[in-house]
Length: 184
Image 1 (spheres, rainbow, N blue to C red):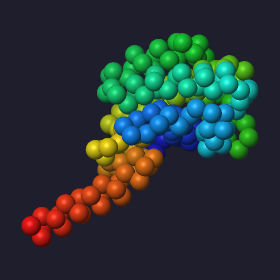
Image 2 (image 1 turned 60 degrees about the horizontal axis):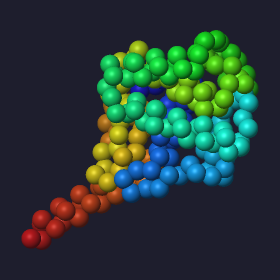
Image 3 (image 1 turned 120 degrees about the horizontal axis):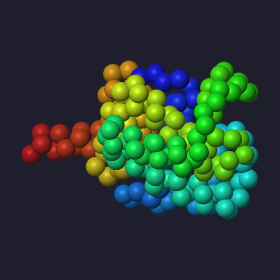
Image 4 (image 1 turned 30 degrees about the vertical axis):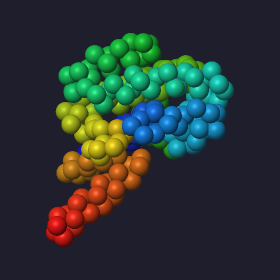
């Protein structure tokens, strides 16, 4: 599935942020300002960015709300997305800057970063919902991982996240089980 650039970028940023939450076997990976800087390097945002503890705390606080988008179906996502847009006082407008062609910003550039992240993620999920592609919003199929991702593959066959080498690990486990059955 191909989404426009800003939609895909915001979906990737949202899943990256959700995957910083403590999971099945993982610790919280967004606890320090250094972790925050690493997130912002991979997921750049425009507008005011303070890079201080208060801003980090705000960004950490939106993660559970974003995680909910992976725990519901398309119809269940609608009220969550609408609430995020309402809470962020979203007022979409077309902008062009840097290397990006016309795209939508839905908050002011000086809104708190956590608000901008929440609203931009909600706007991206609006596109997913409208395109009727919510079945591509997934939780990793690995039995020991609860990482999230959006499947961008052409045929919608991706089953594992990219955070912990899950696909390779599950394939190795399946291979070992097959070999064990063959020798038994």
